[in-house]
Length: 304
Image (cartoon, rainbow, N blue to C red; front, side, top):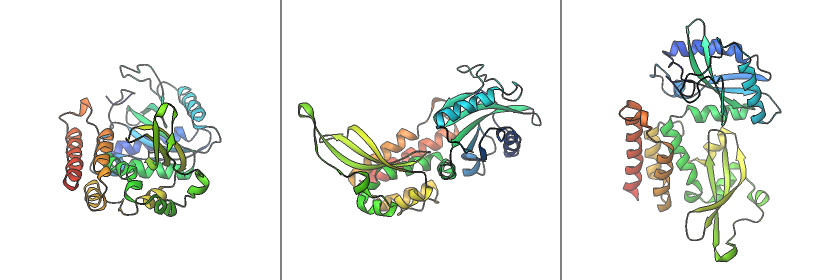
């Protein structure tokens, strides 16, 4: 059983492609549909032969806010026959016919030619740049995503922010005229500020982060710039070959990262993102995650 839908695992790469071919004939009827494309481990691991679910980047041309669009999509799916969009059988969501979470609308889809149903996660994109950004990020392995996120987080610590802003075409004087200041807060609690980049499957952000004085505890943060151009991620991490695999990228970071703050930050970010779930303990997937965590911790312990 797989995911929130409680569906069967996809049995082969051939079945995976058949499900997409069949499902596309349904989803292309949704108003504003432009395209869909597979993402995730199907693309990143050609040796993998079975899958828990199907992750699809679904590009919809719409002027509606994404939350409203996703609700429309749920109505569209739930108007289909139970024999096509099958009710969930997971214990937590038994009987539901769609699930709306974050950027995703999840359904359980039955293919009559294959004779079974699987979970499909529709990852919504509203334009071509967003679809391309999501595709590239989600095609990274989970361990590579975690390492890249860590490198993004420490980018303004390792490189002068003005240089990064120039590479990305960010006019910081216009976006943040006040700049970084020391804030004297009420009741004697002072705050300090710095710029920090953040990455998700949806976008790259530049944040102005305010810390509790003399600590790295965040009091609050403000997003002052964001991008869904995958080229901007490459420009930010210009020292790295993002086409390299996880081990090669980790080796690159060993020679590039120098600040003592980064030696703790990267392992911290990585372990918060790459965790071994209870069902993964003792499995190949769980062992691979555990090994990756140890590699990251030992790499930055060596150079600290």
